[in-house]
Length: 584
Image 1 (cartoon, rainbow, N blue to C red):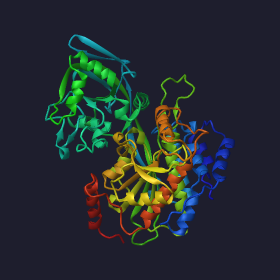
Image 2: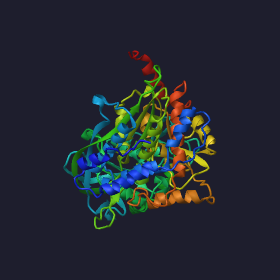
Image 3: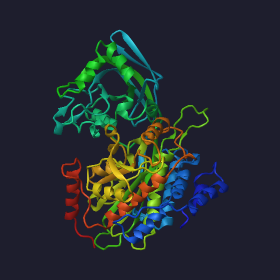
């Protein structure tokens, strides 16, 4: 097997003058990858013999070796624009070249560079609201976290801005739902419930969260309504993660794609439910009554009779990050201009602990998502080992700035390197399973596309069965990079091992998953650990490879199912391709 670390020494020396690594430790990582122990793979019934042999290239030590390097302290958490971010990009591009992939960008470049605006907000540690003669003081970041989206360095002065509760803040004509009722909200600070209404199965797909329920949608709507700001109410149930995750994710420097000042929000933030209740009831209103009203179609925005005044300062830096792309060209003259796409984000949160006196201050992002990049590299290795190349081309993309709001894949969707109508499907890997083999496979967004049938059969070949999302209320389909590909019409897959871990008692797997989310997700403890069991991750990665083989060789392009929210966009993309002049 080819050595995926060849040439890395030169990169490290050129990129980092001071390193905590030395050549001895580097050699030990190389040894981990080279001495991969074969992992038994089930025989995928629909794959050619050549592809069934290539499945065996995907081994746990290969994934572990890549993950160990990408999540090392050397890379300082891979925050966008940082030296660790640049090293991660160089590392992935080097792997592509070693594996024999080709650049797809102009001038034989591996990267699609894009600019970001980094905003560090300096806000008061006490945030004061006024309701009549009463003053409600909240501690930051214990009760509330506020930042600014203003992309010009200046003081942001907020004077007696009125707070307006807008319920879920949703405008959805297809459900005859409008929380705004044409209210003039210019200059107001809007307070949103997280999620979307789930009390009625006929509305917003019941307990399944749609994009309307994402906090990013709330901020977008506040901007469209010309509001001065947006504050989202946090609960662990509605967010799917604890307040500590909000603190780590939103208290540090935030990155955005550049936009005109009139489209930015001067105030953006999160607030705990307890603090919200305090503000609401200090104004003489009852919190439970507001919650009840927000779940009704006739809801109208409610002025909370409370104002906010504060001054924030912002520090601005312009940074560059990149998506890293490599392609394996297809072998069929008619189909080689169509693509199967693999995605995994290479970034993480960087130095996320504010108390620099603590022993560990780096959010390394081992599971999230060094492991995903490692899996995509393992899949690339399996594809390049095929003696008979797939009919369609295979495009591998390590996207940047995912943790900042899916920015790398958003940029890719705005400036696609391949027309969306030429991509049969996107397969995204965002965090691998570290608890062992499972009997079940969880498909996020199950029921949306023709990919379901292929995934179900491949899982069956492995002796597993497919289940839908365990937590449909958390909207996972809209929280990773496949969402931006879906928005431009590309059928997208996002799946991983479930919770029925082989050899473990019922409930153990779900308990481990929830423990990881509460104790390690977006925290300094997301590091490579000796108790990891990657056997389930290997099955998932092998299945992702097999899915790509099938998609690359089957006659028809993948499709969204009839009536799906992305179906019309797909049809438009396919029509655009049909209208293009044939390539010479």
